[in-house]
Length: 497
Ligand SMILES: C[S@@+](CC[C@H](N)C(=O)[O-])C[C@H]1O[C@@H](n2cnc3c(N)ncnc32)[C@H](O)[C@@H]1O
Image 1 (cartoon, rainbow, N blue to C red):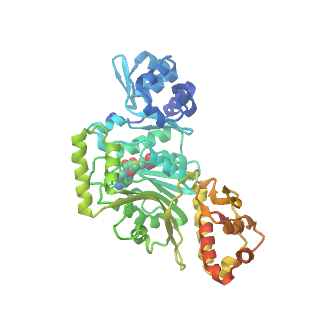
Image 2: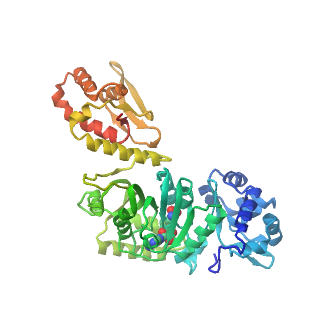
Image 3: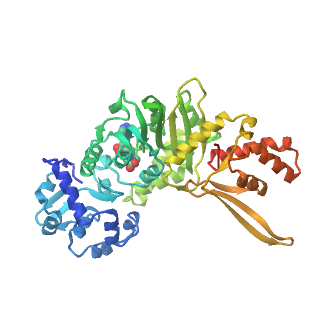
């Protein structure tokens, strides 16, 4: 870490030269993983330093670059000069991302190959220094969660709010004409700009400022944000603590974003929110979006009680705390929660689509499927389209006249067990094998309806057959049947024409 870093070369062409140095050395996703003998980057942390040093002991340019920029080990100056050729070591030192101390060279940032990108961010040891507040996080689990659900359709203008090292902006640059990446942390803006140049991305601008301040008057087809959503009494880290009471950062973004969206434009925001005792969890969130002229889908991924939430976050970010320090901090968080009346915290994705006009906007809030087999962006758009359809089919007659077909991603799994009368179905499980991979059990009569949804017959014919096979009066089962079909449509098992 180095607060004097400029993250700039005097000659901008050096960004391309530096990128070539890494490419020539084989410093790519596959190249680095193979050299380290690990399956993925998260598992690197679990290995010990000695093992990683041994696997990078051949003194090749790749070994030196991995030691310097991934394992965060000082390297011999001659080895670094060889690794950087034809770039001069002094040229790289201009940026402040390496420091030369006599015969040793130390990196001041981390550089990770991710997808086809090279991404710089801060070393975790910065969290233990006075510079901790401005720490720029790398590719964490929340980054990957958001990346997995982003709607990757063409966007004329995309905003990545709270860009950090810029990774979402860079991925969005591949399906956007232009991307604006913003952050309140000046160091994040510098690092994101450095990364954009290093990756040769020319359709991105990185701007410093609070929330939407840098983009006033702009309208976007896509806004993506992984904001500092942690609910705590702290302001220790800009990347984690939003600096507002409780969940107000998320609320503020959700309330303000509609005015920055083009008609039909989407905002996707990872959120943490308070779930008040004695109230359905989604009611409070609904009040955030009322009258916004937007359709909104909240997908909750989990709810944690306040104690577990605090303990998990403190352990995650305060790795150096001893037990006494942990106890003190934990007490402070719990006192804050008591004062604020916070018993539990929900987490998930909120997707907002601007659709103004005279019609009623819809609001959907439910639990996310356990498995999100990404990329899921297209499935989220499909979820919006299916809900739009259901709004037009609130009358059972409309629904029953629709010729549904089953999604090609549906799988039906029957589990049979022996019985006195022979083998019988014990459970029939319905699941989607891609995207938002909802699953659940259904009974055999509903399974028979689903397999007959081939797009040729209206639902009412299938209902008639079902009633016949059950010996039931159609009028007695229509309402429950339609409710179930609506659920199957909403989750993407059955598709309208
Ligand atoms: C959880 S990090 C996400 C970083 C990156 N987008 C990612 O997904 O990995 C939150 C980011 O929001 C930035 N941030 C915090 N408060 C902000 C504010 N008021 N306005 C703009 N950005 C802010 C932080 O500096 C940090 O980079």
